[in-house]
Length: 178
Length: 395
Image (spheres, rainbow over the protein chains, first blue to last red):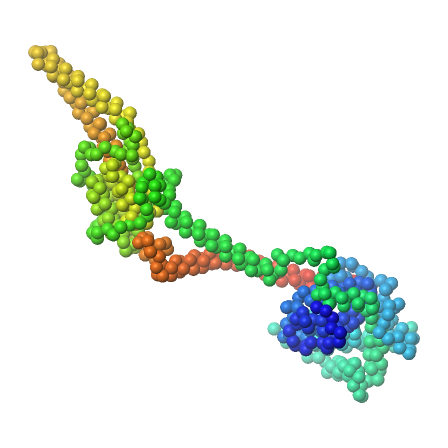
């Protein structure tokens, strides 16, 4: 399955997945999946391995995707979440920040206000893991509330309530004096 | 099913505002817009080298590295495992069906000779030439479905043709046990054919017992067949119905016969001597000789009876024949050497019945297992989910 020279768009969300359309899904989501997984495992090297494993697992399970049960992004992030949690279980890591994605690792955009940026990174790092996961799913992955609920296996209202609390805590942490 | 709780309106409103800020909608909360921008800017970015490597893996369909074939476990794939297990189960069912059918048709059970090897007759098998399991059209004659007492009426004397099949000069008693299976609607025809075949061979029915109840029936015959015609008669009997088993046994009576014959000669010689002595005796001596002559005559008669019995045993072979009525719908070929579409339909239906029976038994065995396994599987899934979620709390 060679990579196309032109950047193909993601397949329609409700279309069945095939080996041919998987590449488009990969290109459309790989950065978001990495950002989400890195926020979960908080180790860049581990995150790279987990992302690779997640995409391979998704590729092998293309037939398991059911459009009636959610979007392709929701399905893919669910697989990535399981892969990340399995890795966390295996390693029993406690998020040593030697390779904190919000630290020395490269980020999307350093921007014109490094102080503000550092504050946001610190606020993200200080969140509870479940809150940080919700923020990652919302801000990094761009999932809507129903998709987040599908990834986490909870009801949409529960997901909305949890997301609201997580954002509230993030905003408080951003405004807290350093 | 539990209905989802509605989202608090205030929470819903703030989430809408967040969505608007993330979408960059005009009029969105500036603080949320800034927060969205800052958080997104803090998103970790995949290392270009790792991205390139992952691109290559996706492009190759996650093929294993060159020179190291991927460790495939095709047996564990449900797409392969399920058909394989289904095929295996079907093969086991087929083997079971074939085994049951073989036991039913080959093993017999009506031969009444437990512990003795049974086998379908074949050409030349057991020395019974032409004993193929086929029948000829027997004349229709009603055999009363009653219990008949053993009969020896019409039994010829021992002066029958000598036995063949035995070495010259030897006296051999031959016994054959035959078990036939007939369709219920042909049961009477077959039992009548047994009698007629026996009579045609110059033999006689030494005993018979016929019982009939509905489609079930059993008939047993003790036939006495001239030894010279035993093979041909057994072959003719085998053609009357489906042969379920056939056995043959022999017993060499040459020693007993020759010994009895010699004793008889001695007894006759002694009697002749007594008769000659009696001709010249008188008085008390004549009375003693008469008494001894009576004893000698009794001895001669006894030995003659014994010799006749021995000759009867060797001149006539015994055929113990059992006929069992099978249900008309029972499987198995017709006895006229033709396999018609009706036979095929009957066989197919019987096969389906057996398969359904096996399936029912399997389901009966699997049901308790499923009752135990289903909650266990659910519990395992819940435990796995809980452990996976707990991993996040440990971060």
